[in-house]
Length: 131
Image: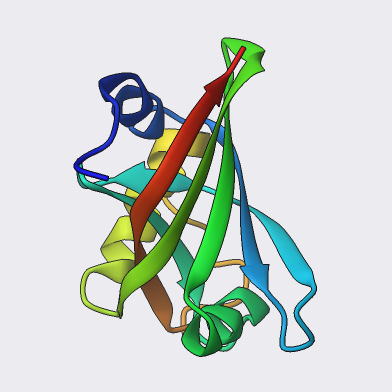
């Protein structure tokens, strides 16, 4: 795939409900609600080092996301892709940006400020819109 559809980019830069699926060691799916973002080419999520989804993508980078339009909940995007980068660089600032977008306030560091944040970039291999 070469780039994301413009409507999806706009939605990712808003504050949509998003669900992130990774693969557990036994092959079963693991699903987590996440805040999402984009750099224009990739879907970007933020997580904590050591959390289950971080362990899952380190072992198997295949992922899927369901991203719902808050203005029209019956309209959603289904995205499949591969994690191409996981970095700590800029990840703490990124979670603050996402928190402001989603909650209107800086991130509350629910697990404590000693958490190591990870910024996860996902190359989109397929995308479908419904609704």
